[in-house]
Length: 414
Image 1 (cartoon, rainbow, N blue to C red):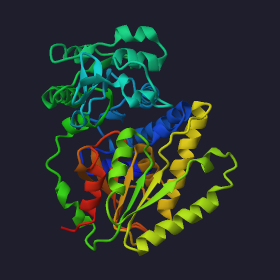
Image 2: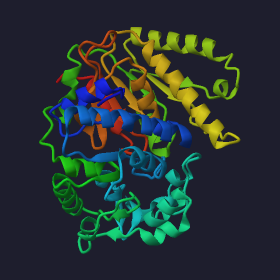
Image 3: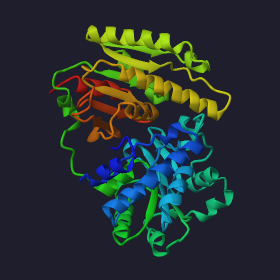
C-alpha cells in the first residue's frame, strides 16, 4: 500500500509481486475540486510509472465506499481524463462480506429484517455525501448532474454481461452498473473483465472491496486473523483512535469502553469549531498527558471524538472541520511514545490521515483481522515506529464487539 504517489514510489509499488497495488489518496476528505486535482496528479505520475516499466496489461480501480459516500463521479472522470479513453466503465459498489449487495441496479443493505435500500440508512444522511436514491443508474446520473444519463446506464447481469465487452467506446462515456448478490456472480464478472484486460482491453471500475477479492483471487493470508497478536510479540500496550461517529462505530466504542484496563480519552469538538484554533494547543497538551499517564499505568488509551455531530453552515466548512479533527488526531498519534505495541484506527478518513502523517512511503498489507478490516505494518526501517501493526477499521462495518475482539487479539502474542 502506497502512502505517496511520486513516480519513484509508484514504480516501487508496481514492481512488487503482489497482484494489487493500493494508492492511499484519502480523497473523501477533500472538496470536489481538490479530489479531482489529486486524482489527476496521481494518474499523471502513474502514467509515467507504467511507461517506465512498460506494463502491457493493467486495470485501474477507483476504490470507493460500499455505502455510496464519496466522489463517485468526479474521481472516475479525472482518471479518464488522464488515462483514458476507456472502452467501458463499471460501477461495482457491492461489499458482500458486509451485507451490501446490488440487485437489479438497486444497492441494498442486508439486515435481520430484510434487504434495505441504502438511501434509507444513516449513510445516505451523510452531511457531505448524502443521497436520495440507491438505484445506481439514477444515483450516478445525480452525481454527474445529468438526469438523462440514468437511461443510458445498463445494469449487467449474467444474461447480458457480454454486451459490455462487445462494443468499444472512444470517449470513456459508457457506464455499466454490475449486479452482485453472490460471490459466484461477482466472480463471473471479474473473470470476464480479466480476460478482456489480458486481450489489451482498457477499462475502469469504481468499486468497493469485494471486486478486488474476486479479481485477485488471493490465497489464504499467511497469518490467520486470530494469530495477528504475534506482530506484537512483547505484549506491549496499544492505542485505539476512533474518529468515525456512525451508529456502528459508536456501539463498538461503547463495548470497548466497558472492558477493563482501557482509558477513555474524549476529544471535544468545540475547539475545532472556533476558527482561530486558540484552544487546540492546551487541548493537545492535556490529551498527550492523559495518553502518557494511561500507558504508564498499563491501560489502553482509547482516544475518541465526541459522539455529538456538529453541523456546519456549508459543505466546505463541514470538510474543513472534519480535516481539522483528523489532522489533530494524527498529531496525537505522531506524539505517541515509540514503545506502543499496535495502533487501531476506526474510521476511513481518520485512518488515512493518520497513515499519511506517519512519514512512510509504503506500508505492507498483512491481511484482514476481521471481515473487511485490514491490518498493515510499517516498515522495519521506520524511524519511530518500526514494524508497528496498524488496523484500518472502516466506520461502516463490523458488529458491536469487533473492536473489542481486535484489541484483544493484538494484545496477545499467542
